[in-house]
Amino acid sequence: MKRFRSPSAAAPLFYHDLAGEGVPLIFLHGLGCASSCDYPMVAADPALRGRRAILLDLLGAGFSDRPLDFDYSVAAHARTVIELVHGLGADVVDLYGHSMGGAIAIEAARGLGDRVRAVVVSEPNLDPGGGSFSRKIAEQPEEDYVRAGRTMLVEASRAAGNAVWAASLALSAPHAVHRAARSLVAGSSPSWREMLHGLTAATTVLFGEASLPDPDIDRLARRGIRVDVVPAAGHSMAWDNPSGLAAALQRATEVAPRSDRPGSQG
Image 1 (tube, rainbow, N blue to C red):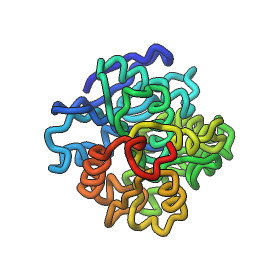
Image 2: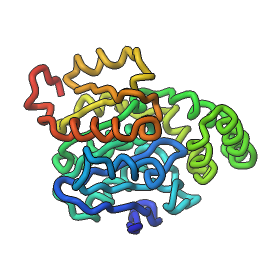
Image 3: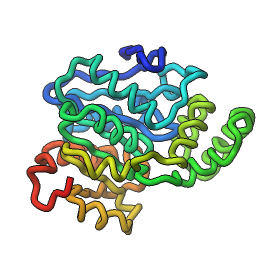
Image 4: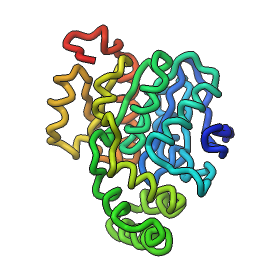
């Protein structure tokens, strides 16, 4: 793995840099996950073969550092992504983020401006309130979650059949997960949805087939945002159907910028 020291966090992030051609595709994982775990099969799929891929473990997750004085908010994570892009020396990148990583990708794209060609997010956090797991985590005081809550959630997730997420959550720093969950519940101003609407990069939102129906599909399409569905998958589409996700990413990163598409209100 490669190492990048974030100036804002004063801590190192680690990432896989899979050699390839063209615009680098940066993968950003969800809450309690790690790109080094979730995306190797996706990046290696024939649909993305030959494409340079950056599989980033956010601070507090995977192989990256776990500083106690970092706030782990979506905005703070986005700053580290922006720093990494500048550190890579890439003139232009594509960003893919899942769930919490989707909100981070949106904030990072807003900060990077023309350096981002395409933003692809799968079942992202767009509005305040978080999801079922982030709400369950954030409703506990941080010290309670660190002391016992993380272990209880890992055991409950494992018992419910979410073995991969349980294993990844068990390896994530509990203080990092709690602070990130609290950020998802609190939301941002402007909201991540409003930020998404304002991006000039090509934008695509992915849904897993098993997550449908979802009223957001029509809402997003009315704003000129492309929507695609990953078949045979639910929210955890990288685990459910890595080839289907790879194909969706390949399609999404070939579309024209929103400003060039009919019906865009970007």
